[in-house]
Length: 540
Image 1 (cartoon, helix red, strand yellow):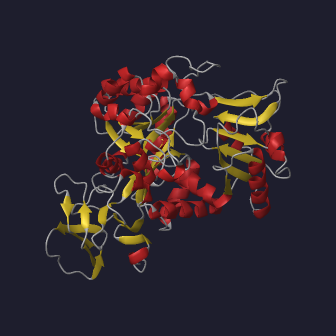
Image 2: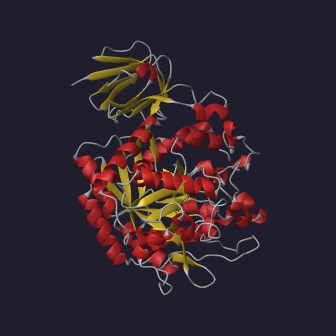
């Protein structure tokens, strides 16, 4: 038994029963005591130097495995501004990684590229001898080169799968661009990465997460593949954070098939570090490819709309069956029609089964009708939000605002209204769609602007801003509850896991526009250092 003392610290426990402390005693992997005044003795002492100490952060919506795999295998395209830059980046990556059976790019920006200017013929100019797939920044769109189109067997006669779309030119020929659920359908027909590639990606992803103070996550798209890699990492003792999983449910599922598959996954993966506890639904797509489902048509010149990906009765049936089987419901909703459909499903489940502490979640909530805000709280759902998007981007055109239109603009990322209605909340990143850095996200939650170094524009609906305290709760106690581990993590309290971070500045008192500069100097996971720099660099 080893005792570790963190002392000379400004500890914010996020525990309302004891909000602050000066020292914290860890015994093995648990918090043994906290206090003020003279500190007790210990085998190992860590002088925090008067710095802020918090519970480890938890990201309740992050694609950790796929994002890490991108780090290990894909060329980043997030900053590419034109066709020449994209082709140069992809060609260089293909040359540098001859070992990869599939050339992967991640992050091209809608508004710079799209159906009109990114095609197989364009990508062929960078790589033609191997299949290639380039994802956009939302990962709801992807473009193939000609070799990948051939291997996937996409012809002029190939039908769109449910909730997916193969983009075609005026002659009916596939251009290479794919939307939504056709992407996984195509991936099944392309050369696959190895489990070793993915394991290296997971290690890279969790190292990045640890460096930003993250000691727990919820991966919101678990299939057999993700379950296999996370389970392997747990068995090999390689997880340096906790992983909750939301298992994917598709439009092809019935209540019987969904409950049977998820029950088997839950039984196979009960934890402690990797457990399956949620059912994931994509209720709609994204504005960038016009698959967000709205209550009224898009307000831009093309107009139109998109349907929800699950029908009303199917939604109620699936939600009710999974709720009574005691799964949390985790729903991707972008448009207000998708949000309403999900709320109606949760209401039906609650009416049939009664309330229980499920931590059902609607995530993203880009556009939410004002009349549905109170319904969300009454349905017992948590708003799982990504505040980084609640800003006017200095460089990338926000085509979603044109589709939403001025009449509905005030209903966009309306976080303050959600909290005022009594809705529970947690914060998350949706990495690799955006940064996983909690401090950049917290800054935007507070300022509703881009970072100072990015040349921010005017604040976007500043009346919807959160406080630093609310944002930190969203990353700690509330996120732990959303991940079904709020009884042992998320706050600093005796008996809870020793998941602790030390920061280089006090985020509760620094100017809002420097919150994103915050660095994590030390991250402890179960009392063990998984990230340590600066004055703590020698801690092992």
